[in-house]
Length: 69
Figure 1 (cartoon, helix red, strand yellow):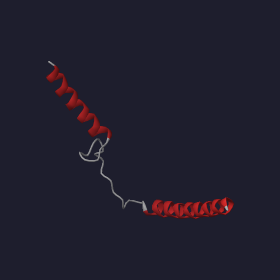
Figure 2: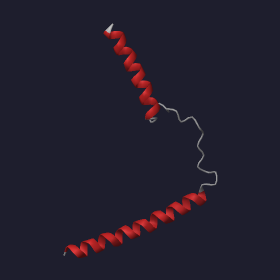
Figure 3: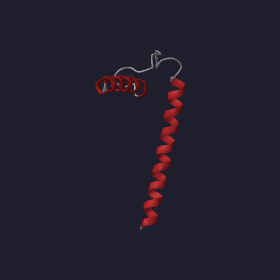
Figure 4: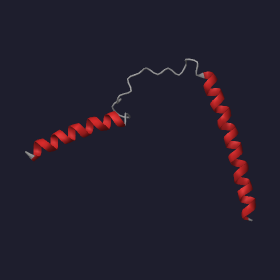
């Protein structure tokens, strides 16, 4: 009886993990992703924002290092 319960729980757990973490088995993400559909504008905006945030971070780090000395 315990063996059957163990096997059922293992199968259910495996299916749940395939759904929650779709890395190895594909999971529930069956939609087709295309990175070429009007994403270039979004990517450019995100890259520009990322660049600005990195510059701000560097400024904050340098100010913090100056205040420590």
